[in-house]
Image 1 (cartoon, rainbow, N blue to C red):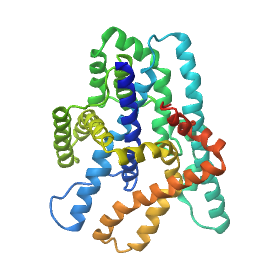
Image 2 (image 1 turned 30 degrees about the vertical axis):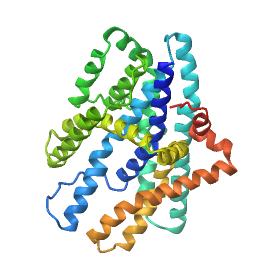
Image 3 (image 1 turned 60 degrees about the vertical axis):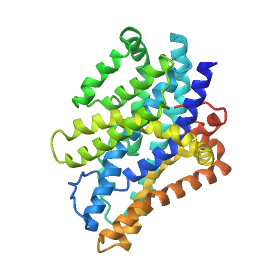
Image 4 (image 1 turned 180 degrees about the horizontal axis):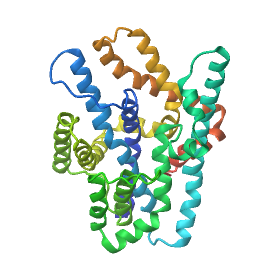
Length: 367
């Protein structure tokens, strides 16, 4: 009964956190990849840079690690003994919940680009994206550099699933020391540069796997401990903003990610105590994968382009205002596109999302 209560509470908080984390993803994709130096002054340009860097390039670094932790945790949570038979069954399930959605989402992006390239060619409009696209191989398109860029997470998650026997053996023989072993190369930024095997995926899926294998409570519920993680995370965000132009910045942001995920998990616990809001977040959680998969198929870029045309003079006050508007417009469009397609094409939506909404109704989650 104790494990059942722990499982129910953890799954509830995971479901609650999915939509807020998705909103942070949208904020992250509202600005470019370049990390700008923060200016500590009160003009609108400095405020815009400070806010966008704090949210999009710093706070957002806990999103993908959190999703990896969830996935590792859920993979092992209900497994009492890890056998070849169970491993094969888990891989079979992941074909439908990971592999097919990954391929389908990249295929949608490919179709979108092909349509755009051909339309632009017919109209005689220069298209840099089309020229770059023509130089890519199928391996590049579907694996090395996914056309739908955010799906690198799903690609890596597929690889982590294949490695689950190694995670099982690691934590069976080394226990929590296995996490420390995975942490060292991550903190030193010793990336192996093999597509699908990022150190982010290995460490955070590993952390989730350890908690799932040991049937430990993933969610912080103690007020004092949660507050400590929040305060340390806020301090690290400030330190990262100050250090963003220094060579050790990546190491600092990785320390923040390890601490920050626990602050977020505690935040999810606090949200679970607000009934109306938590029920709304759980209700919309089934749409998160769809939003994650489709928002980069021109939707968010079109919205950004629309507001850029309004703000032709690059007025910083307008930039700051639009920065908070764009993610929610994108969320609104993607969510109601999901609702609409769910009604008229339920089989297609089940295929492309790994049947996640049906899974949520059963109070379990596939990732």
